Length: 183
Image (cartoon, rainbow, N blue to C red):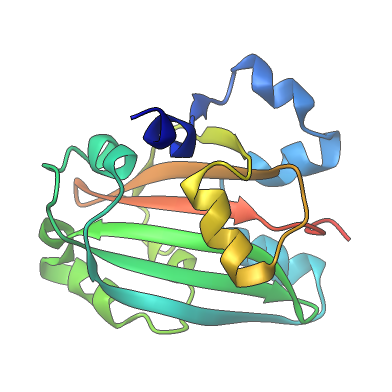
């Protein structure tokens, strides 16, 4: 039980004292409410996306809780890496409940390497929740997932997440700012 406790990511609201540990430059990126894809494209010479996976899986317990999904309910999990100037800058994990993939939102199932933001920010009726932030450490499952991908040697890395509502239907987007993000 204690082992699972240490693996849990602790998400806090934007105004939590933890945000004081962010550098001013990183704070501008983490709390950027518009399209992260567009911001990366405007700040770097090149931009690309690598699709790591897109398949039906059980979301993590904190993701189910955030989306109001019953435990062990499958959702479409999409994970990508955003590259800028040929360097991995951001890891993205999107959890899309099956009920969200109905109607015009069914296009989310066919994104491939198309940025999620292209769909989200082109719809003027999409709403976004407040950001939650986390300082990920090696004991946490999300950090370990990133570590397996990038062989990290860092004490901690920053992440943010928010829920988007498309026609009232939710999806959860988590973004991890990879080491060297600001370089």
